[in-house]
Amino acid sequence: MSKQAVIFDLDGVIVTTDEFHYKAWKAIADEENLHFNREINEKLRGVSRVESLQIILNYSQKQYSEKEQEVLTERKNDIYRNLLKDISEKDILPGVLSFINHLKERGIKIAIGSSSKNTKFILEQIGLEHVFDAVADGNDITKSKPDPEVFLLAAERLQVEPVDCVVIEDAEAGIDAAISADMKAVGVSSAASYSKTQLAYANLVHVDINEVLD
Image (cartoon, rainbow, N blue to C red; front, side, top):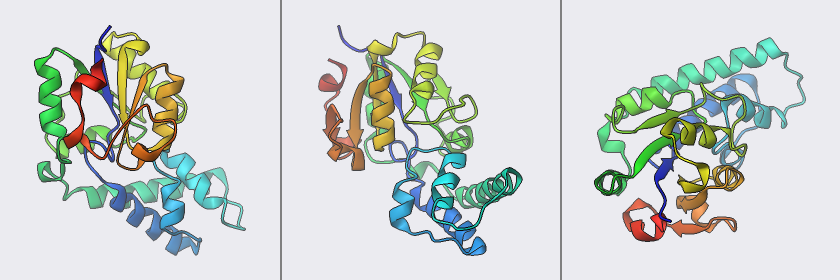
């Protein structure tokens, strides 16, 4: 049976805000005199803001209280959202709009499944806030990827069984989450080389829609 729904990760699949995340975390790290570089930043892909901070603090000798950590995550988000103000439709990644249109023409339901709490803001900035049939994001979940919670919630909101869903991801944690949810895992960008990826493409421009949905 062909798949009935496609769930997209947001960052790295629909639009790339990786550099904004890096700059925001780097600003926090510099303020706190914490060790942080692009190698550490790679470990934050697909991970929630709170868990990202935990990864960064693993490199620190200082112990931060729960309140101090909350202040840091909020400060990071303020910096990040300020950087996001310049993002627009022109930042949508190549192949995204045509792929979405092909899915809609076939009657395939589409959703966003993202750990980001800024998902709706980003979708508004790039003009896609009314395109998806459902959105599940960091505001709706208690566990971020690789836990499958966000993808299972997206499937529930689409009223589609998990086994009938395809997930498109650019992060290893997202691929693991898709597999745990009993969904088909399609990797693009950096996730294309991940050993657990079931179908791999450099980007959405080259995705074979028939192979994805079969």
